[in-house]
Image 1 (cartoon, rainbow, N blue to C red):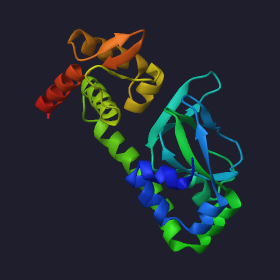
Image 2 (cartoon, one colour; image 1 turned 180 degrees about the horizontal axis):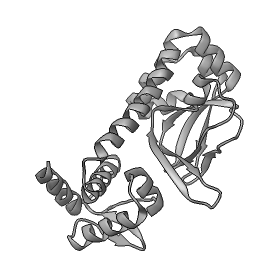
Image 3 (cartoon, helix red, strand yellow; image 1 turned 90 degrees about the vertical axis):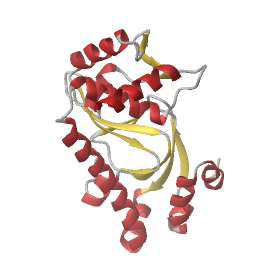
Image 4 (cartoon, rainbow, N blue to C red; image 1 turned 180 degrees about the vertical axis):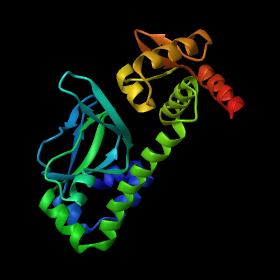
Length: 230
């Protein structure tokens, strides 16, 4: 696959690629990351600038005893390694893992930085992507303080289904660990487990082999229940 073929599949990616400097595209290549792959490691050297063109990734850190702290989810199209590049850091400040199969633009960091310094439109594009992620992170965490645990869990599942809507014969399955879900919802794993069990008892979701499954009828019911709350 090349850039043109990728652009044909997604208007947002087309708009992004059309806005990028030709020198960037000439210096870059497309790479993929498989579902569940840890793509970047905290402390590793920043050797490339990345743009996420397809898929979804999340940012997390781990303590020495293996406990994970999940910061945010990033959905295409967006930039990766932007905070390190713009702040002049030479190593990554967090881990990044692929939630789904991802396609990324990969550019040697020297070329990436050179273009940021020389092309104000490209600098604006990357800065705006970083600002959007920071806004989403701050906005979500601020409003989360005013919702009940059950409401936070419901909203999380609705947002997940909005990205991957269930079809009549094919339910949406949340392919994330409970700890990952807890980190993104900003609740303890024990609380998330309790909320999911309650939602299952009320018929809004199913739990199959530990994974949350939501069929089309359940999605409609969950949406109606959320609408009645707001």
